[in-house]
Image (tube, rainbow, N blue to C red):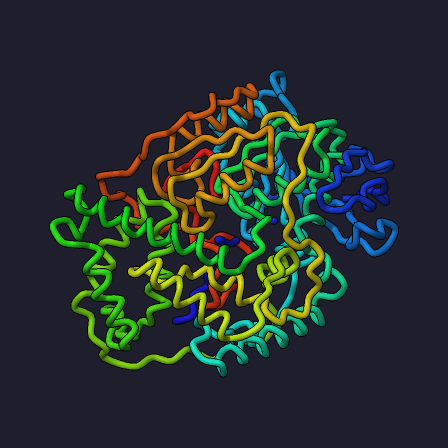
Length: 532
């Protein structure tokens, strides 16, 4: 179908008695007391299934509302891979999925995106989860028909703007009706408290923590609330939850999107195996983009017309893993040059029923945007077009527009971090990152006095997927707590050889082009130390 299922996010998882002692803390106030009840014996581990290969799964009861721990509960689906060398076990490594809306069980327990041969698997029990609202953990449910009928583009008129507002109100009301009370309690603070409930139930005084993308926001808020329970924390592709201005959010996203396209063009110029080598890739992109905006660009394989929004999304997808995506993007743009609209296609009718659609419910619990009019949004678009003449606007504009007139509670709005008492925290960033811009890492680091930044001088999202150098530093830090010296850099690791496997890349977090976001789509055709 033409409307893509984009999985984040760019997106995108037994029994313990009542947990108390953590519900009174507010964002920015540390609360590292251990829950007063709950023991390791309360987790009823069992085999996840024959395909999971020695993985254990369980359900952990946690409060729906952490402010009322004696009330309604949900069962948090968790999984564990025990350390392969028990004699040298260093403890638990909690790996939080990204998204929001991705399944940690699918990625890290069943999917083994930390391979069995990784040194992390030797020394740590790897634990992950389907976060609340996702997959096996009381999923946020919405009408599949309504999700499929989402508006598709940044509002270009007052009528389209009002259409977005009406749609967001309908969708959020529908999702709350189908999900129940949990709909108002899927914010990141609640997810961070769930992580500490897992720690307590495992009987661990401290945990090590790794996350990428949205999972880094969970990590930051965990460190803020429970600094005394952090043994080591490595975060890559960093979120900055202190951004209040919607224009600043869109600007930083668009700047890295534009810069990534320019880097791709330079790589094609220098790489003989790029399908566009010898041509001006930026000029070719501009030509295709103009045709898409005029309605005269079509997919040559299907004859389906392509919009400028769909073209931008294809570029965004292929910026996550340049070693794979740039070859695919070059071939794709080359194939579009001679494409003609041969037939008009329509979407099949939407399927009935419900779908797990956690992304906007989680996202809009965490972000409040002060947008009061179409004129304000349109002004952003015009300013960004001048700033980024080739790409004009990051597809992640949906992170702002999806939350306008959303009828869910903003229970975890933006705030500056107040983190004290943690060990050094490793932050890993790329030069340009289309999903979590580089400047976000610097902003987050200023809010985390104990942090050290590892710079990857290449392009991409998820540095452990893109850089062997970054993987080595992350593993050394998590195992030995060896922080790289300030100023340490990893050189770009772009490939000059096209991949021998099919050129597929994991989908980014969703744009409005429909999202039933509960996994990150295909695993990348490489074997990273970590993965999405």
